[in-house]
Image (tube, rainbow, N blue to C red; front, side, top):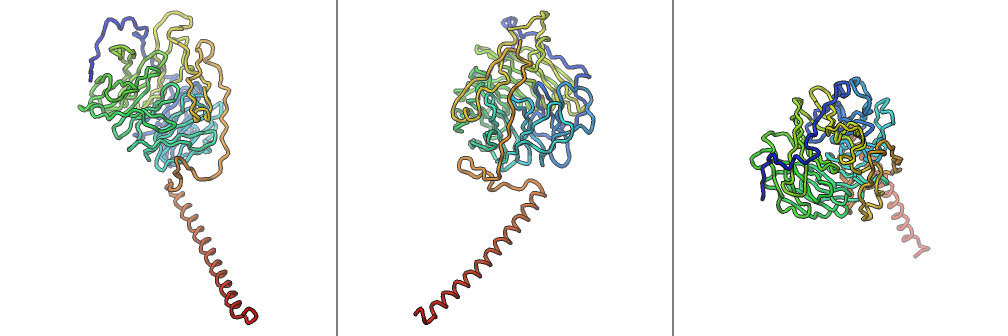
Length: 480
């Protein structure tokens, strides 16, 4: 295995991203007074799009998250409306990449829910989801939207299963059942034909999601993997994790051969999880440590040394998680190429951090803004499920980044019925999630028992009547 050390090389001078710097928004452009969740689950608890910012909040008696219009900066009042329909803590939230008003959430109550946020934001607490999805038997820790199909959502639960939901019918249509422990991270390649996962069983997997077939598997003994990200169309994966000496580490892999990593790099001796973010337009990788305030960034190349260290953004305030603004929501005029929304729990603060290429020109910078994945889906849910793969529909940020999406989410009408995937009824043994549900289940069972006893009694009476009639017929001298 080749383990290379990072060093400053003269070739780095040719990079147009060599001088990228992080700029923190002024206090009036931050979001203040938000009771950010104290949950220790290793997620970002934050989701951003061009219209809204959503943050999981601390709440009693169930899970909730807050949704704020992206332009409504400053202090948020204590009784600001929340989305609060879950019965357990919310563990992950993700905006639909094609419909700005649709957000998915998953929770310790073992459900996944789809919410539709009104255009101006919430006026009152929202408790009714447009779709409630039940299929996991334990809490659901992760959700991911398919990158090119409009109605496909993936969820990973503590039952070690990944369910693929077709939201056009509101049902799980596939189940990936190859993990032997909790799934820690899911990442798609550009067209969504491959899914990479990291798992508590210390394995990195590349999976064909429609069949559930594991195409490649790495048993990471030296590099304990936590997070994985596909590097666009480079046919490479990058993982963050911990070395055998408990130092933070990243590793680069060939997606078609996971027998050995291409390189491994030690980062530092801190203990917080390293979150990787990859921008396929600029080929830049950002590494943000949970619990510290640093964001390192690199340029990724297909040639050696593969990872070219650029710089580090430093801040004394530790980050709990980070939301990422999609490309079409960036400030193109300011040469902004990436924007983080940093959760500072102690201050109840969400701090935007812009990554900027320093340029004086006022004109559109074509070289740092190539055609990028837009807001239109390339496929319907049925097309993707039938086996079709299609890359994202690209758009230019020069003239199209304010173009509104025409898509509307239509929730299917659902009847209560069995959820059968891969021949298994997922809801057959669903445990009750709250005390109220337990009581409801108990009373339902009591009613069912009473009904069955009544049926048995009636059948006993009927049997006795028939037996008497039969005896009468036998003893009747006319019949003999």
